[in-house]
Length: 323
Image 1 (cartoon, one colour):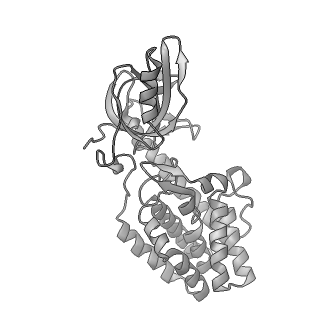
Image 2 (cartoon, rainbow, N blue to C red; image 1 turned 45 degrees about the vertical axis):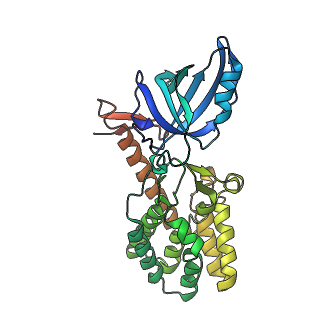
Image 3 (cartoon, one colour; image 1 turned 135 degrees about the vertical axis):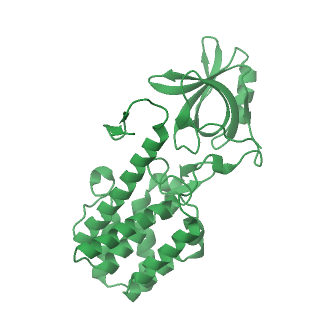
């Protein structure tokens, strides 16, 4: 059994790497002045990716033989040197450096996907608490028909909430959904909101993500997820489930609006901006949960790798205090 030694987020230029990674992207075999090379994008449980370049010699057949053993989602054991290219870390390997595809059973899949921050059974109990808090019998029936479906329950136990940005870990979907619901529950104590509508919207706002992503040796988008996206997938799932519950037209339209507007703007993927208080509540709760988890994860990944008090976070275009 091969074990992961060091996460990509902790790698430093100049180090020699003898470790295992999962292949995220495989690029074509090409010639260069000294022979033939290929490029892989590798990832691990840190949620980060790194470019790996195999600089082969002029024996094209030998390089191609190695290249053909590798596919996307393969787990590979490599030897390489950590360098820098265009201000990003890059792993560089030469002929003779190890690059071997591992078989199932030779590695632990959890080395490549982060584990949940909370016990799953505890989160499922909390989910049921919020479902039971909904007094409107039709909305409660809608929630149970979706969230208690055996296939959905299986996904809830392990599904992530994103590929990279936030809650990208086992159980991350449930963690994020419950955070959004807790914040919305607080909003109902501060403002005259329709409790049942906002809690239902919070619990279902990201339900399309269960179809948008899948877990293999990494978190990746499904074909339908890439083509359609979780907002539309969620609206389709919830709309179909509504047919059996027979909600009023007003309640149906409001709940669907919460789903389509929860990203807040067209820029971030929502075809409609929030048009009533319960919709803005779900949007703000969603943004808070996602952004705080994203920032916390980045700070955790760089702590110990720098001596300064601040690090520039490119995605957020700002300096972050890390100490």
